[in-house]
Each structure stands twice: as structure tokens, then as C-alpha cells.
Length: 128
Image (cartoon, rainbow, N blue to C red):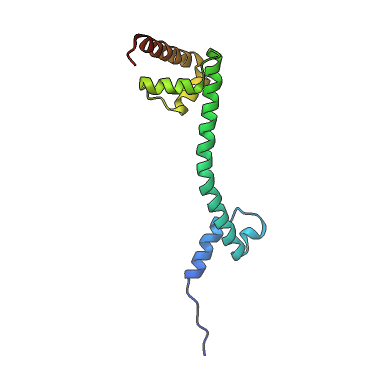
């Protein structure tokens, strides 16, 4: 009997995997079984760390805003600033506030002072 040639589908699948794992070190880029394991592991890590990255950036922004806001006064903090921003319905997210805090502290001081004045005035007159 003559030899039957196999199809190309499995080879194509392994080639795709080899391209994905070509930057891995050692057997992780050469052996098919370890290559598949490392590919799964890499994809799991990247999926998990996308959420972790969002979390870390949010923490960084909050830290930056809080550091600049606490320079204004001892009694004023990040949480009170955010609370007053929501009361006033100012649509500035934490990323933008952190950029303002780094590049132009005076601008953030002006924003917070205006909010403090208006909220204090409304509370003293009994509007809120």
C-alpha cells in the first residue's frame, strides 16, 4: 500500500501557535506541548492583568489628586473634593483631575476653592 499524506490543518494550527510563542525562551518556543501550555498561561495572565492595570491606574490617580488637595488645607481631602464635585455636578473624572493636579496645581486649587465656596454658601443659606 502506498503512504497516505496527512492534511495540512494540524500543521497550520501548530504553525499559528509557533508564531505566537516565537518570542518565548527555550522549550517554550520549540516543543508543541509546552508551547500550547505557555500560550494558555500567557493569555490568562494578559486577561487578568488588563483589569489589574485599570485598578492600579485608578489608585495612582486618586493618590495624585489626594496629595495635591491636602496641600490646600489639613481638613480638606480627596473624598470631600469628590463628594463636592458630585454635589455640584461637575463632570471631571479622576484621570483628568490627576492630569490637572500634575501639570497645573493652581487650576485644581481654583476648582476646589470655587466648589468649597459654593457648597458652603448653599449649606449656610439652607438651599441644600
